[in-house]
Length: 73
Length: 274
Image 1 (tube, rainbow over the protein chains, first blue to last red):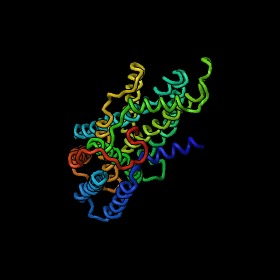
Image 2: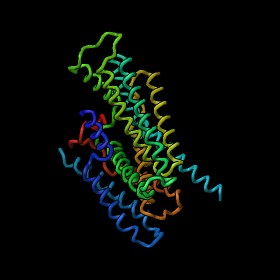
Image 3: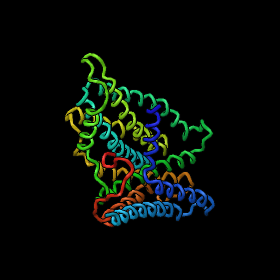
Image 4: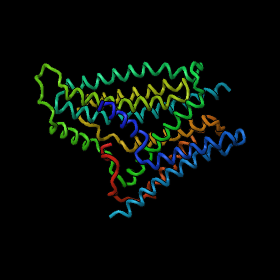
């Protein structure tokens, strides 16, 4: 049983080590799933917009971590 | 026209093979370090037997799951629509890839400690020596402790490799083969180096590999998610290449932006050994 639990924890850890980072990605993808199919068929902006949102989440998360480091003694 | 399509397919397959190889290499190196620690302290026979048993079980899992995956996109034998498969697989790849990329950026910026295979080896060997486990068995019998420790780490890291192969192969039946070949190649390279050196592969640039694999996984994940949503990518499959370039550009710009100061903030788990 302990072995199964450790595998479950390991698999969870594959995807999540900063909860807010993972949640932000899922929220952005959820918004995209809701908006993109309703947008004009073949909209060329959709791909770059999807990437831009994900890149912004990555940038915010990394810079937030760096700011936290500077504040700590 | 056929030449163009063949070129696109070759690009997808080649990128998939390289990405799977690099991502799997990182996991194999981490497993090797623990197996070496177990073997050097408790004896090689049981450690290698444990690792081999885990590999056999993993191969059985892959043999059971692989054919099912091949059926999903090609023949419609299941009721799961292919865009849903791409969306689900893409989301998992994104969570996995962006997590790796974030960690690789923070390490490259000096904000968290680099992964150190020598330190990981020393820590694991020390933990095994200090464990309450039973004394070493007689030479003829199997050391249950060593067998279990090697089995567990090979199984855990191996499951990550299986996930990597499934994730990269989710884009189509033709991608599962290069993804699998990349993972097998990584296993053979690491196992061969381990047998030859009998020491941790400390010189493998683990963070650079994780950086590159993170960029590739993030690009693939974004592409599959977009495909699942019905996005018309500019340049079709070649959009993967501009996504790779864009993620790489963002990541490389972030490293100097973060500055270089060792962080004292608590990090989940023992990150330097992760």
